[in-house]
Image (cartoon, rainbow over all chains, first blue to last red; front, side, top):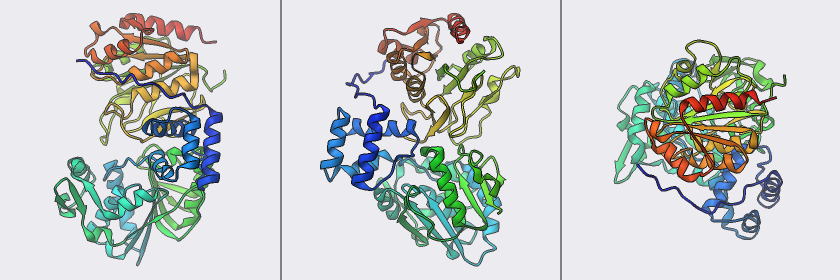
Length: 282
Length: 193
């Protein structure tokens, strides 16, 4: 079997100095602070944007960022990782159903923050579990992301049918109690998530780097967002989550993310170490 | 001995590569004095005991690193399912959940390239049998940064697409039998101060 290897002209590799210049430019011109993003992955994203926009040099990139008004939304859209899926890590959702949701049920009114919600797939997964537990009507889910285009897409509740089969599989593995197809309506190449799953969700822009506490929550989900931050910024985000949680509130993070490297770990108990579910104890 | 490594061995493979990786790990001298990172194409969203497959004799430790985990010299790491594995300098790992490359996450290209940027000429990349072209571009970056690339001889590979693609892309890679891979890897390790 033969494969055509793409023999494209390689853009010049980004050195630290060039990266720093780009970060500073974005900060002063557009108000987004990427200075404490993890260097390895952020460099890859910038290189990807350059490749997509067919920019050959750092100079060209800086020119576009400075002079082309339409360029920044494109840059932001591609610099952030907008890859997500419904019921990603089904084992996590199963643990959440078994260990967290029964505790949430004891509150008269439940406030949840889904930070870094991307295009909403995981938010709607959570809505489904809350619905099945009979809690959705007394929940409010605040779903935030730094990318306004993601939020627009998330609000529509429209997904492509392409991945629904995978999602159905995930839903079953996550211990879903109903028929997954009850939760959406399919037409042509798209599905729309049922209205009842969307009505208690508020989508809003929030940047974990610069914005602060805006409410108090019983559950905060922030999965696979902090992998893009360096340790300094991770610690800031953990502080923010700590201060946004009610006493004995829950925090969930991505399967390979860790609280252990942060000084805040003493203020949390592991509810499920494997699924990265923690509880504020202090 | 400083714990942050100066040298790295990265091993990538897909279909048919598990027994070969196991053989390489089993036959290299213990304790390991070099850091090894392994990337194999694997299923996502399922529970996996792959890390146990490689260490049946318990002569070394192997685990899937967490995000920002410090890299320790002498440890063996396995790229976790559903994440790309990158190096944040020589000090720590960095995980990434961006688009799959060649339908794969973890991608061999991503880890190889990142190793090359972090460790430069002190990188040894080993590409084994597999059924797509992942790894070819990563090998290219390793060579461009002065590192060494060993590619399993396609004629001895269970699936030759992966080694063939890498050889086609890179004139300077060294085509080896498994025996030679083990020999050259051991001598790479022996030269580390």
